[in-house]
Length: 270
Image (tube, rainbow, N blue to C red; front, top):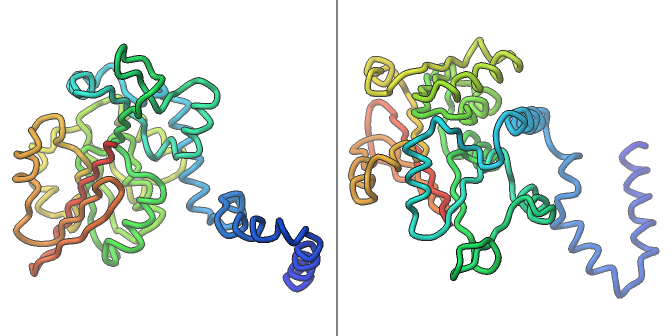
């Protein structure tokens, strides 16, 4: 069916709706996500396929036994907190898991069971929506630029950079060997090897790479090693851009410098 015929068919259908129900239907059409499958581009679909591949390789909490420090810190949170990866599980996916009894958004304030009070969620990945916003609206044109993701974990920043930007090269530096293997699996399967490279290394040994980088992304990479006051001091950058995502609100701070250096810090605790 061509556009004009489809438009006429939709208008004819709307005229058959009961007048009392028409406002609710129009509001649903304006706000529903049921049309997402018709509006998403190929890059969005590819990232969703990557997320599905990774979900099949990881436990629900997306934490590995080799993440000793991270696991310990989450367990030390004053209120019950669970790790839910924002790239792998969007809000709709979480709702479906809760309906199936596989996850809960709440816990009992008396005994700690997941039943009554809001449960804290924390993520170490940007969601698909956040990735698109960062590459389409926050970062400048990355043509010919080198991007480094410090603590690349599942590689979401790298995949987003490959699909949503023209960056010349995207480097991920990851200390955990298990996560490096997962990234290599994705990079090979989706043929990203021409522009993405993952280094299994401590970022402290990669001075030359950082010196040559045009963009550096750090997504909560030091949160388990520094207290909040020290994190704030270390994150302050005297030149370039500072981009913070605090509770899903973005603020951009820019000062003049000859070479752009961008740091992105993401905190999604609730």
